[in-house]
Amino acid sequence: MIYKYTTLALLLMCVVIGIYVVQFHFILGYKISHNTSDWVDFSDFVGGLLGPLLSFLSFVLLLHSLKQQNRANAFLIEEAKNNRKNEKFRVFETHFFNLINVQRTSFDTFDISIKYANTCAKFNHVDGVIKIEDCIQEFRNKGASDAEITTWLDNIDCSEKVYNTLRIFCNIVKVISEKLTDDNGFNLDDRRQQYHSLISLTEFSQLRMVLMGLQFIDCPQAKWLQDHEEFVNVLKETGLDIGIY
Image 1 (tube, rainbow, N blue to C red):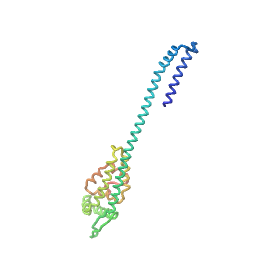
Image 2: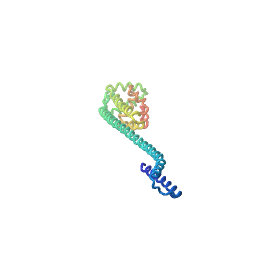
Image 3: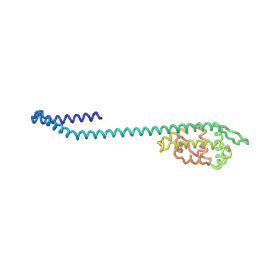
Image 4: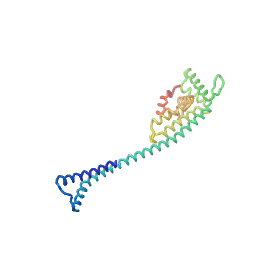
């Protein structure tokens, strides 16, 4: 761009001198002067004519330089912003996957004791979730209300295994909501992607236990998740919903 304007300035100078030579030498028949003062006058003429033009070109070049500098500054600012966002996301990912591991470890030790056929049997891991679902279905077949199922679930969950499963899951959702905020440079799509990741990385039986906790456990975590519109919408997108039991 600078080369372009420099060429234009030289071209203007040649045009001015060329017009002067044609007008006074070829048309008016003036001879080339050997008087020094005549050449001084000629240089004053050329300088007076080209000075404003060259000043204007300098101004244009200055504006162009400022424009290029503003673009470079905007690029650097955007790059720094992206670097900060990427660093925040790396910190978030570390925390997120640590909590996923905690959730998985916690569910590996999940067990529940349920009275069945006049005996109290202990069910572990996936079997425990399936047994609770079977019992809830039996209660529903007998016309039991949510309150009655809640009371029954509180009685069998004396070691708070169901509540702990819900609490850990709720903490992960909170990490996504609080770390990937709009103020930190993220948006709804970023959070939705992580909600989907959480649901995908949560064992399906454990996810069903979370849904049971949301429906039947009366605690702040359950209330918070029920009111979390972003998460509930993602849950529905996956074919799940609160209140399926």
